[in-house]
Amino acid sequence: MDTDARWHQDLVAALHVESLFISSGLAFPKPEWADSLKPTPEESARAVANIRAWRCYLPEACVNSMIEDGWQWST
Image (cartoon, rainbow, N blue to C red; front, side, top):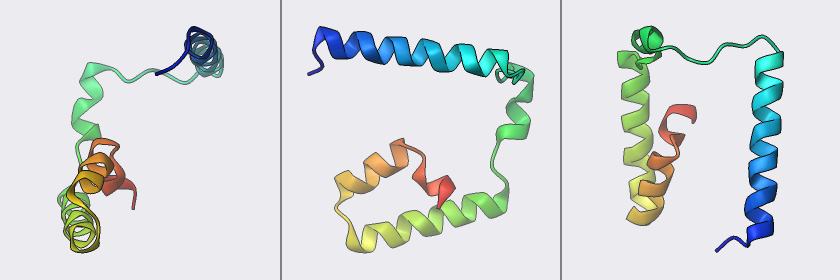
């Protein structure tokens, strides 16, 4: 469990990063961009292959955590 001080530090850091993001001119994703964010069939096939490989040597809880964090798309 985070202490109050740790929570405060995390919030300050998040706000700092957000302000840097905005000042850099980068745009936040918009709902109409959703179609461009969908994985291609090739990306989906690679993600499935990654998950199948992980299940051969990692515990299921570990694989589930990796999926929740989106690792199947980045490896």
